[in-house]
Length: 279
Image (cartoon, rainbow, N blue to C red):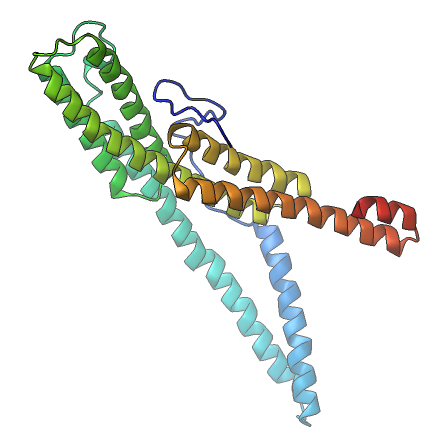
């Protein structure tokens, strides 16, 4: 994308709600156990065939034992290992929310139209650092990074307005410039962390979707996130590479869909329709 504005005062294209949780992917029990039974049955007949070829007198016994192990292992994997991992993830998400909520609200200076004093400036920066630390504790949870990014964005807007009016010889000038440098670093860090975590999660979700429309919609959400980050850091190479990769991924989904449609048309003898799909 060319001509992206480097904005610190507006958010466009993607409306991310702070506090929104991405729950880890969890296959419904019915689907999981149907798949497990199918794999178990396939394994049973495969092992039965191998043992039968080896002239085993009772190949079904060995095959049954092997299939039982597969079935039992699958139940243990879902009900113990994966369920515990999912519970830990959700618990970690809640701890992050509690850590951030426990911190004091940002200094009223962010909403105060009056002059940003040295004391207010220092207090706001301190609180931003505290919230940044809370978000880093559980660094792979996206909504914490987004909240810190929004706070940084508010401060940078306030700081920008103050720098327009501060006198050249004012002691506030150095403090405002230093505060801007500190918060800009946090602004960039948390935005990029949020974009990476969210885009990766959505891309993985797209791969797990069944229909083409679902895959496209989820992939487009991931691309929108990258575009949001690019509004602020249009020259960030990592974001550009992610944008290219997601664009190619979306194109691959579309191409695969049309190839599948063309193959179905050929199978049904609709050759003209197949040619139109390939085009």
